[in-house]
Image 1: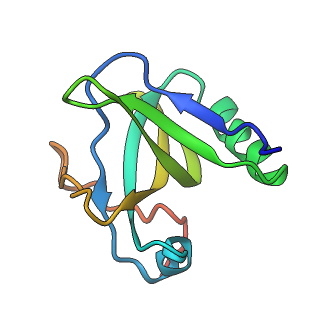
Image 2: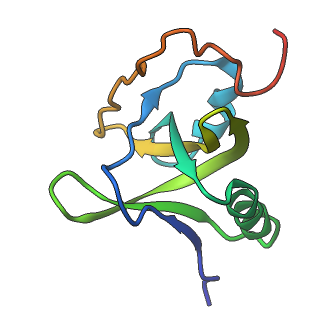
Length: 126
């Protein structure tokens, strides 16, 4: 019997934008039997801590966590969540999700309106 996966669903708004990443610490997240690309998506949320907690609970119980959303074509897509972080920003709460994309999926480069957003998402100084 397979355990039921956890999912975070985007219920309104456009599909998420995935940013290609090349940081060394991400190489371990991309390992697997099928080649994948690791990407980051940044989402606004009303309850970031609870969403991160749902991911942590799933992982602790050896269950996968997925981000589910409607694609630009209107079909339901989902990607595996590899890591999650909640942030408090001036604009409100944000949820950063590192996800696993199939190699054929081309991440969209979205640098946002403010190119000064260079905070290291790992929280490290290096």
